[in-house]
Structures are given as C-alpha cells and as structure tokens.
Image: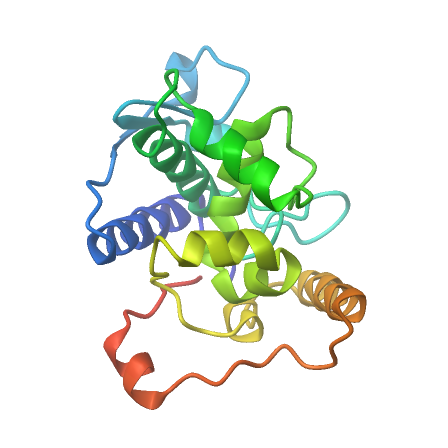
Length: 216
C-alpha cells in the first residue's frame, strides 16, 4: 500500500529524531502549514532551528510518468525525504563557521574536498548539494556508500546512520520501476569502481544495537 503524505511526514520526523538522538544532535522542530496559508513556490524550507513544510506541495510516491520520488531513493520530494533534506541544512549550519540562515562553509568545503557529483538534479548551490546527499545518508546510507563513496566516508566519520538495512532492503517496498532504476545506479557505480559486489559484512551484534528504519 502506498503511504499517504501524512504517514510519510510522521515516518520522516520519527527517522529524523532517531538520527539526531543517535548522534547527540538537537532535532529541529517541524511546523506544518496548510496550502491556503503557504505563499512559497517550494514545499519546505529551513530556518534555524525549525523546518517549515506544506504537505500539499510535497510529492507523493511516484508510480508512473516523470514522478520518481520515493523514500530511500536518490529522488525523494515526499515529506519523508523533504524532512531529511531540511535536516541536512540544519546540520550544515551547525557545523559551519561562516553561514547564513540555511547553509554554510561546511557544505562548501565538503563538496570541494570530495569532488563528487550531486545525487539528484536539484543542485543550485553547495548547500543544496549537501542537503540532497545528506538526505540519502539518513534514509539509505548503504546506497550513498556505493554511489558517492568519498562523501559517505566523510559523513560516516562524523555521524552514525540510524538505518542499517542494505539498499535493497530499504527499497524493497518501492515501486518496481524505482527498484530497477536504483539497481542500475548501483551497478553503474560498482562498474566505475571496478567492483562486482556492494556487500559489506555487518556483525549481528552491531545490527541488534542499531535502531531500525520505518519505511512505508
């Protein structure tokens, strides 16, 4: 069953709070606005230390056409992914010396250091590059490990993911076409890296000690 936007918002907030708790971060508060009172062309924005979001402006899980948004995928404008994107801005600001309301030099320096491409088509600046990558780090870290390994290693050195499932497990309930598209991205990244397998051993003890994600 495809989750509603309200369910995706609840799951997104729960994941954000688990991630923040696991990493000693204070989670931003979330304010939800009705469409009639929303005057912006975007579905959400971050201002320290609160996320403002309009559910009607967010995407539903894409099942056809050009709509590809899906929790855990590289494209996710559902409330689930939007919350983690805005969390990325929160983390960027918290870790920057020079900053404005939603981005800072942390994202600028990280992109310069890793030199890796954006994970999605939404990348007007370094702050959005980071927020989109951080979204995948929170929702599907195993996928980010494969497709953007240098940035993943930098993030993993600072923060512990709350999701421990493999990318296949995270995407298991996604639409079939989205699972296939994700598999192609993984295969291409492995080919470029000269690898045939994406698997990394994880101890049973580590799995038992790490919170599970709630998807769909």
